[in-house]
Length: 152
Image 1: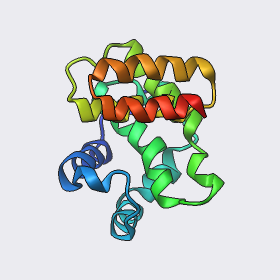
Image 2 (image 1 turned 90 degrees about the vertical axis):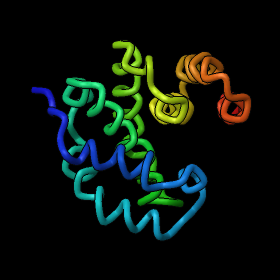
Image 3 (image 1 turned 30 degrees about the vertical axis):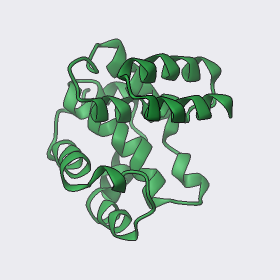
């Protein structure tokens, strides 16, 4: 069974890419964390145990699921191991989306967040793939972060 494109997916993508400013994506911000908690904590809890294939029915759902399982927990559970609890799921969805070519034609920012679970991985193969994908973005600043993660 595939999770169809649902309102949560469109809402999360809109919130992340249109309501937040790029400087809010990575800086600690209690207001952003509170908004994410209020709007998406229930979705994270309700869907966090589902298999990756359920989020690979369409590109929009896959992109939103990567944000939901990679970025949202990092905001909701700062300074806690729970921030990383859904990394494997986010990584599997990321790889499925990239394997289907769903990263093609996306904006640089959208691709950056789609690839982020690979940067967060501790597996060297994921890190190497992250370096290739981030290099293809053509953004030396972002590639620098991928290189830093690789070195760690």
